[in-house]
Image (cartoon, rainbow, N blue to C red; front, side, top):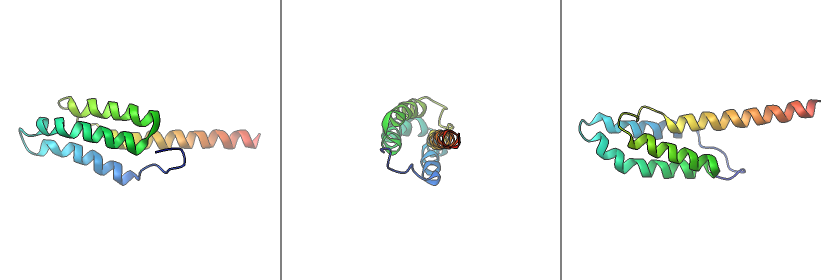
Length: 100
């Protein structure tokens, strides 16, 4: 995603995190399915958020999905909040500078 594109909806991010967590619903299959899901999820995250933050998030997401027991981390949702926090912070800075 470039600067002119909108970030993904929060619901999309939550759904992607739920998909990543579903692997533990079937005992014994979880870690095997994570090996398949990790690169897919990392690519989706990197392309969804784009740029350096997308690549960094994708790398983190890959590591998080591959490591046993780490599926509980909602990487997509965290990226959504970080993206919106940074965006809101930048907008607040611009407004305060313009107000001076």
